[in-house]
Image 1 (tube, protein in one colour):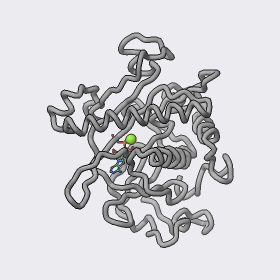
Image 2: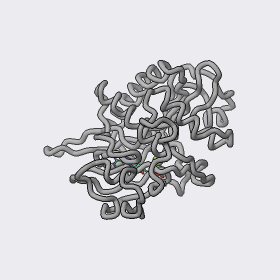
Image 3: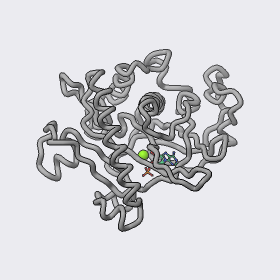
Image 4: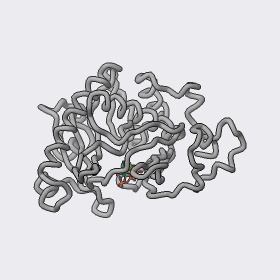
Length: 278
Ligand SMILES: Nc1ncnc2c1ncn2[C@@H]1O[C@H](COP(=O)(O)OP(=O)(O)OP(=O)(O)O)[C@@H](O)[C@H]1O
Ligand SMILES: [Mg+2]
């Protein structure tokens, strides 16, 4: 699919940024999703997550490209996962490899999307006729079954455990990790004048040598799956700009990265990444 050999510029070739790393053309693709591609990692139990510029919404009904999104999400997710590691939240992030790729631990994905809401927006506003922007009485956690054909239906804890998607113990762990992550990230974003309105998490299982199972955070945390509003103006700095045709999508993602102090070295000009990787 991608080929390092096609690159005209040696310096810009991301395959050369990490010495000793296998060129992408020879790496086995495991899965291509809407926003990312997963490749086999350099060691067993690892994967390479490649962040694309593709954007989809409304369960794939709306498609688009946000130039530079992949580069920014790679950085933002790296930053947030690293902060979470520092406070002891286990997650799949190992290290960033280049502008669009990061090395992660392979997990057995639990087919549940965990949504944590602090402020009403999107589907909760529509479903219960709560005006967008209403502060919720407390953080609300929702579960959605990851299944595109079924439109990712909302499910209860009962569905999750009765259908065997996760055990009661695993779900307890997922809930307590999600609430910790929400507390921490709410504070972190508030520190840069952003309101964490809601966000989506995915978890997975890893098995140690004794066969013990551990639940860890996987996937990504980025403006693709968080609603982030400027504290003062209420301006939306997330994927709702794409969903609702508000314009300035790439600029909004860039602003989040800028506030977190992690814009790529060359500043905004650098975010497109090498042409061959677009
Ligand atoms: N550490 C990991 N190990 C294995 N799979 C992972 C890991 N982290 C994320 N994934 C999975 O990789 C895929 C990431 O690709 P992407 O986000 O583009 O998928 P998607 O189009 O949103 O599809 P899906 O509905 O499967 O989430 C997701 O299916 C996600 O569940
Ligand atoms: Mg996804």
